[in-house]
Image 1 (tube, rainbow over the protein chains, first blue to last red):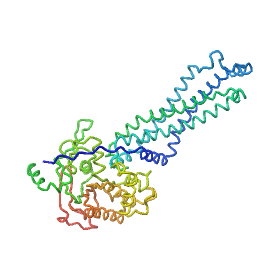
Image 2 (cartoon, each protein chain N blue to C red; image 1 turned 90 degrees about the horizontal axis):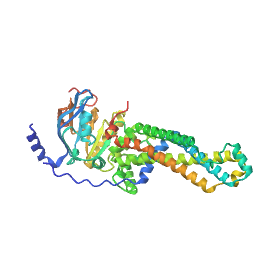
Image 3 (tube, rainbow over the protein chains, first blue to last red; image 1 turned 180 degrees about the horizontal axis):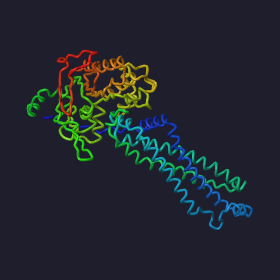
Image 4 (cartoon, chains in turn purple, yellow; image 1 turned 90 degrees about the vertical axis):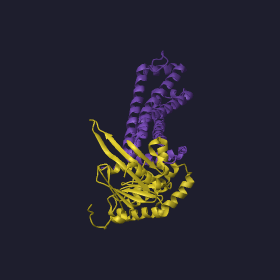
Length: 220
Length: 256
């Protein structure tokens, strides 16, 4: 009765720059909300970075083995014999902070999805694939995460430097563990990036599942 | 008309048919086992290049039918063909392709993406269709000229009036040279004069490009330019009438 339907060609994947521009435009428009989400990341990563840096500083100062410095270290309640390693409680605390920040980002991203149901529906009516929608949310979360981590990294470094200079004076600079600091900074940045990408999984999936019908719903 | 007769009749007009719905039913199952029959067996052929208006009170199944023939909802029973493609057999990728290439949507509340400029809104469907940004930009500008917004390409939606936003929406709808434009009460949020301009624009596109226009509307002016008008009630076709057989007077309340 009906002729055989046309073969539908493979849909061309939308290039990343387009995805980027759509999600960046979205973030510019909702700048204040993006900022609030970012503050959560900044604080968590700053804390992580600060703890990592302190550990490096202390270890490097213990290795120095100077008597004056050891007195300062003892005054600062550092357990010299254990090599200045981070204790279990601290690890737990860092983990908890990161987890809280993760939940915060998920919450913010879920809100972004609910808020934009009609927008997602419209995009799908225009021919956006699920993949495109997923990508925009991942890009949005990743950009927030990486910017937040970078800021958090700087904040953690500044606070750590101030605290260490205040406690140990010029020893902090004399024994400055450049390699360790770089590693600590990179770990913080990486943790933030991973955190934000993991946080985007559920919201992006939910966004992709929204139906184009939603676009037709009239807001009351 | 029996189903075989109906199909035979339809076969004769095959080349002109752009949408064919065959005994479409859409049932919603409620929590307590109730079945709501939003559409209860609708058969309909829409011809290429026609202007079909769908009318019906709220809850009549009008929107459901509209979604069916727009490829954004699938029937519980029956079949819908859009430009000879059986919608029920498509997966989500293919549906996205269909919506991208065959159908242009116009919404009551414009649904222009607020974060993009007029030009970006118009070029977005072309990008989804795989056009290069340069091609899309050129074509997008030409389309904005067509809808009368050539000087507003870089404006954002909040800098534009409702009528201008709806023009952007029309431009976006025709971006990929669709076969069908689906317009859901496109003039409902506009004042009379602006609404008329949008209707004229749609009619012009139909004349010049042979695009089939299907709209859900209560606007007498839209009914006036329609080729056919379909009334839906309780999920069934209540009446399907050629425009020329109706006596529509602008400014008077219609009595059915």
